[in-house]
Amino acid sequence: MDGIGAPSASLETAERPKEDLWEAVGFHRMLGGFFYKIVFTIFHIVMGIVTALLLFPIMFPFPETKGYYDTATSLFGAVYIAFDLGTANMMNRYIGEHGTKDPAVMLKYLQYFIWYQAFSGLVQVTMIACWALYAPVQSLLHFTWIFLLYSTVQYPAYQGVFKHALEALQQFHKSSWIGFLEGDIFQASMEIGMVIIFRYTLGANVEYGLILAISIGLVLGKYLDDFVVMLFGMKMFSQVMGKYGIRVRDCFGHDFDRHLVKDVFLFGIKTGFPGAISGFVGLMVLSWWLTVPQYTTFIALLSVGQSIVNFVQHLKLDLGGSIAESYMNGKKALAQYYIGQVWRFDMVIQLLFYVIIFGVSLVLGDALLFIGLDYYLLAVPFIMPTMVRRFFNPYFELPGAILTSSDKPNVAMGFGFLGLGLGTLSWYLFLVLFQLPQTYGSSVLFWLMPAGDIFAAITVAILSYTYIHKKMIRIKIPLWQTVGAPGIMAGLTALGAFAWYFYVYIPMREAFGAIVALIPMAAVFCFVLPVFLWIPGTVFLGGWDEASVSSFEKAARISGVGKFIANPMFKSIKWAVSHARLHGRFKMDDADAMREAEELMTLKRAAMKKA
Image (cartoon, rainbow, N blue to C red; front, top):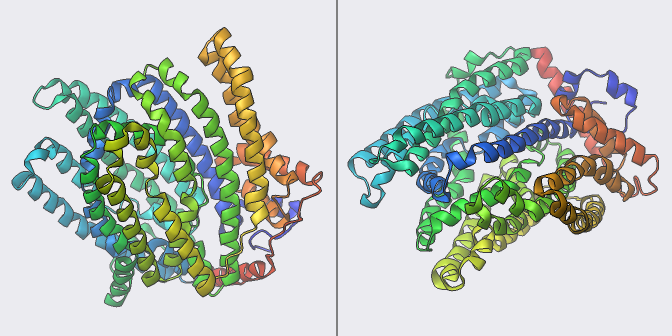
């Protein structure tokens, strides 16, 4: 069966071609995409460490240099979101639904996306240029060059269309490669090159200064790579869609009609409007923050602290168009299964990496001192609050993805405005009415800046899940697999991290220095823990059943560059399964989901034969 992960013989899975598994409807595609992404994330972390060691002191010698760029570019977030409303959330909703049953219809949605982004981008670049040159705010004159250059990212603004389409089609092995090339190869290289060039050329001119020169280089580096990456997106898109007779040049046609335009535009307005308003509200909140002394310094320190944690929020399963593919084609049991499994696997992975980050936070101060980033020591107190806030992100974001992918734009808009209102109220109370930063100083800033909106987000998430459960799909989360088994493992591992720090790391640091002490700690937490302790431990505690093991087996088969991680993990799962008394005791019912997955595959095969 091509379904979601039903128990199947290992021989059957091993003999099935990789491409067949990527075409097969099922949860294994999300897992396979995760292992592609995790390899690129590891590379991103390593490159970040190398950059910090060798280039960060040159690129950003003071916290203000990065804070200058972050503050200037944040001013236009609202404008960009507002103009993107015409295509907001359309990829997973429409490409996800039609990519399975009617690729010819899907093509028309891609055409609309490209034409809309091209014309709206021209308008944005023109408006910002006129404002920056002919009607600037006097207090922001030193940002003029950043404004002009940063506005160009909105033209032609469709460079990522092929990557987003592949994600919606759940071709994560392709989209992950594009994301890797974009973020860690071309963009990183151009950012570093441009910042260094502008620092030592334009920065030598007192008329511009070091901080402005670095910011200009950073803007150019983040933009120029988009065109190179688009070519790779075109190539991979043609590899996937060629079997349906769809070529890249077909995407630049205009076969869509006014009914499609109206439908997508209104859908985008409804689902994206709260986000657009939040951008403008963000400007107001930013004005409140600018009254806080040394805000630009603290925002840069927050950025460094968040960079230690933020990669974890990318280590979540991408739904792509899976909800639209299932729910919009009448397969509610399959959608229900996806939601439960996403919760389960995200929790297993998040808790694992949070334990690793906890270990990193224990020694981060020593690492910053060693590489000469004394100015950034105050970034360390931001880590724990950021961890608390980021932990909830995958579960807060999931209801919005479900609602938009299920064609519930009005409901999504309502919850979006509710979250916006509660969040704005929170910031008003904290920053304006009670003036907590001015009253209590940096001690409150460490929690307020990364996590001040957490109570508003929790409220909206609870109400959203309640609506989905009662009106759309009964949400079934395998609680023991999701919370019990990984939670116990997290507690045990955190205790182990404490023990290692006090009884191994500190004595080694005193005897041999911080770097020597960090090497075995890094090896244990980054390699031994995930494969040999965490995964088998969750199996022994009853965190897996036959269907989830089968999905993992298929995912390991198609994990590509991630095989060196997925295969050892699967072997440890197989070994633990044969010895675990609790294995399968907390099984999630998947019989209806398997049947519906096979029904969707019948539709997909029919579409391929038709092409």
